[in-house]
Each structure stands twice: as C-alpha cells, then as structure tokens.
Length: 493
Image (cartoon, rainbow, N blue to C red; front, side):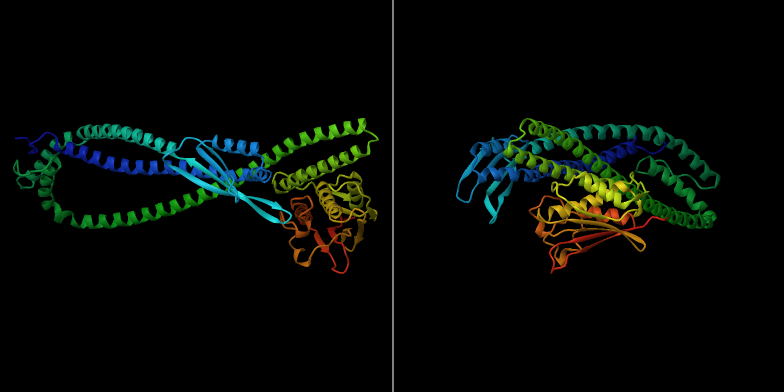
C-alpha cells in the first residue's frame, strides 16, 4: 500500500493541471474578446474619423457644383473613391442631377452624407448632398485573422504553462509530502495518539496529510488556543493597516500620474503649437518674399503703366494683409510662451509711436496720420511688445475708417501715467460690443467685410495688462468714430 494511501499516480498534480487549463482558458478568452472588441472598435472609429475629415473638402466640392465644373467634380469623386476604405461617392442636387463614382461593392459598409452649401449675397444656398460609402470588409477580415492567431497562440501558451505548473508542483510539493506525513505521524505517536490507518483517505496526497494533521491538531488545540486568538487579532489589525496603506498609496499614485499626465499634455500641446507657428512663418514668408521680389521687378520694367501700377498696389496690399496675419499669430504665440519673458527697459513712448508710424507696415496701406507727440514721455516695458500693440490699434483705425478721413495719434503725460490715444472717423463700435472686442477671435458684425482674424485687439489688451496698464474705448453714438486710449505707468525719474 502506498504510504499516502494513493490509488493513482499524482492525482493532485492532474487536478492542478486541469484547473490551470480551465482557469487560464477562461481568462484568456475574456482578454481575447476584449482585445478583439477594442481592435474592431479602433479600426471602425478610424474609418469614421476618415469620413469626418472629409468636411475640409466640402468648400472646394461645393464650388465645383456651383459652377457645374464637370471635370473638377469627376476628379473630386475619383479622389474620394481612391482613398482607403472609400468605395462609393455620389453627389445629388435638388434638381435631380447626379454624379457617381463607385468601386467594387462590399458586404459591410458605413455611409455618411454631407450637405453642399455656398454662401451668396442672398444667403446660404443648398447645392446638393455628397454621399460617401466606406467599406469595412477589411476590418472584419483583419479581426478574424487576429482572432485565429490569438486563439492558437493562447492555446499553446496555456498547455505549456499547465505542464510546467504540474512539473513544478511535483518537484516543490507532492514529492515532499510523504516525509512530512511521516514526521506528523511520529509526533502523534509521541503524544500517545495512534496515526490514521492506511487507506482511510480517499482523496489526494493533501487529503491524506490533512487527516494526520487533524489528529495532531486535536491534541494541541487547547494548548495553543489563546495563542491563535492573539495571533488572529494581530493579523486582522495588520491586514487593516496594510489595506489602508495600499489604499492611500494607490490614491497618491493616481493623483501623481494624473498631475504628470496633465503637465505632459500641456507641454506637448505648447510645443506642437510653437512648432506649427514656426512652420507657418517659414512656409508663408518664403512665398511672400518671392512675390514681393517679383512685384518689384514688374514695377521696374512696367514703370509708367497706370493699369499695371494699380494691380501692383493690389499685390502689395494683399502681401501686407498676409504678413500682418502671420505676425498676429506669431505675436500671440510669443505671449503664451513661458520661455519669452518681458524684456523690460526704459524708453520714450512718443519716439516709439513716431517710429511705428514711420515704418508704414499697416495692412490698410499707406495713409497720412495726424501725429501729436509730447516729448520725453518715458515708460518702462518691452518696447517690442508695446510697438506691436500700437501698430495693431493704428492698423484697426486705418482699416475701419474711410480712406479720406483723418486718423489722429496723440501721446501725452498725465498724472502718474502716460496716455496714448488713437482716434478715427469710422462707423464706431456698438455699446454692446465694446467689452467683447478684446476677446480672442471676436469680430464685430460691422467688420465682416474687412480682412482679419480677431486677434489684434486681443493682443493689445494682453500686452497692456502685462505692463500694468489699461485700455479704454470710446465711441459716442452722436459722433462717428472711435477712440482707443492706452494708459501705461510712467517711468521713475
């Protein structure tokens, strides 16, 4: 008879292997389902995002439909169906006119409709509908292929792990149970308690060992009862303490991770913004310089041609507007960058105003200014930023006032501060918009025909605030025109 009462070889090992296979299979199946679900969702979402991104093409397609440019429409539909996943693109007008480009049909697809609209002098006109169908057959094929790979790989790993666990259990546990049982039986004999007879236990090795230990536990129960109670109390206290420590540690780790992720996201976003603006500056300034050089050559060789001079003036105004737009975005980036602190120094505000006006770099073109400057009005600050604020206010006054009306620029000393006022004779600013004009990207309904992005006055307000000053706007309803007043602290003598 086997000393452990076993009828089969290593029943405990077989049970552990079986349980390991079942448990590992269930866990693997759950993980595989989640992984495949996420894979399908990610691929499906990518196709949806690709459909959403088509909105940037709608203006050009709408323009082609408006002009009934058949070659351009066909080219646009071919371009859409040549994109990944897109199998059909159709344009339908309210009059029943249809343009269609289609590839092979698929079993599974998603579609999206986009309205084609155009803004006219009479309002928004509905030109038709762009319908795009995207195939997702490739997603199903990819997910099914991945399913087969995952199931096969996990099955192999499960059986390898189960076999290793069985071998490891035999080496570390079951091979050591017989000597342990004999030692327990020897302790029972010393206590005057006969060991359990062979063959009583019908379980595995652990069941047989448990019977022997149970006999010994009965004899020792009274002697160690009080010790167990004390140990149980201490263990409970330790577990509660460990649980609280783990809970607090997890909370601290989560808070730390959230803070680090937030800081990293902010730094990444700022870096991407700076890189984008640098790229825009480089990409736009090069073509602008080329256009400017070409315009100068045309002006030299076409001197005396009145019609050519007028067209060159249009080119120069367009380049000035584009340069002003780039400068506004770059100026905003400089203010937002923590790596660019104020370069504060003492300077004459009147001289800076005269220099800004003499530079004549306004997007509205060259116009005479009525400049009235008081000498020796010194302030402390970043003269470059203050110059940007001055140029923006003057540029606004020139853009939003009639070409033959005067624009007055005055600089004077007031008690405790320097005062700069720019006054025009334009249409004025409604009372309800005077607090909004300094908001980022805000543009008045009266300025929708004038080039701009709504950053000029926003930058003026930020720059003046950074220097501890104020900006005020006056636009009396009885008197046409607007006056912007910038007040900055005077420099100490």
